[in-house]
Image (cartoon, rainbow, N blue to C red; front, side, top):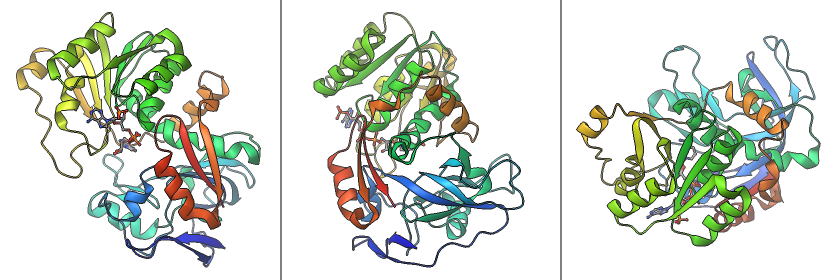
Length: 359
Ligand SMILES: NC(=O)c1ccc[n+]([C@@H]2O[C@H](COP(=O)([O-])OP(=O)(O)OC[C@H]3O[C@@H](n4cnc5c(N)ncnc54)[C@H](OP(=O)(O)O)[C@@H]3O)[C@@H](O)[C@H]2O)c1
């Protein structure tokens, strides 16, 4: 099969013929029809993000495809079925605290690295081998719709955060990083889940205006000044009432102070979920005042990715037309143009833009 291989952090990907993966028990082979190229793929591939990966690697993170082959443990999955290849692979030998690897993308800790050595290759290839539970059915689609359905890969992340924080219909949410790729998706998902209002702070007036144009007055934009007190007051005023739930999904380049500014807008008894990359490349720690957390009964949580069950309920929101995928503007490239796709994804970063490979 053809695959794009990362052989060194100082060279571009090489598209070449490699041996097709062989299915073991507890695994499924999937014909990859479309695979998203994340905006910061270039920073993973050149080592700037310092991701824990071993080379050579067929990279990628998530895909839409059709089941080619199932194993004896698959009781419902059928050959030919459309699936989302969930990159979130969890170890199976400790149900309480599984290690996680993002197949083809990144690992966390020693256990994650061990998993990365086995569930190594990602979807920048014609075929991918995934654990059976990671081939999540999405229902019937056409091959032409597969690139658009790659938006699942983006949407599932903030969905995981809102589920963790228990966002309820009728609540007011705030997204710190609302103008970014994942932050804008967090806004879309919160509205689909029934949030009454989403406060969207940012520095980019054009993207904030675009959010309001897309979603109407359930989104309240706030132009950030950089002054902590002033910005917090502006966000709280924009909410026109208590903010029930705050999600932070800012990238590593942003200071912890910006996170704190937004986190501390939450109401007493509110929830704050941290999902961004802040501090991953060093920087000040998030100094939240102990008495503020304690006296206000604040729940603060971190969330990496989403539970397995999130795929089917998110697909349910899409199928119910509560969450339209056509917000995403998709550019597709053939596998042979993978390096152009990586460069384009970086140029085309941001809200509701997606670059996709069609292997
Ligand atoms: N937890 C998970 O499971 C998970 C999964 C995937 C990714 N992530 C994380 O999500 C992060 C965000 O990714 P992304 O692709 O959405 O990034 P992005 O598109 O580059 O978004 C950047 C966002 O940060 C804002 N920002 C940048 N510098 C700022 C500053 N100094 N002050 C205030 N806001 C600032 C931008 O606002 P402006 O428009 O004002 O510039 C924009 O809203 C990634 O870095 C990654 O670590 C987490």
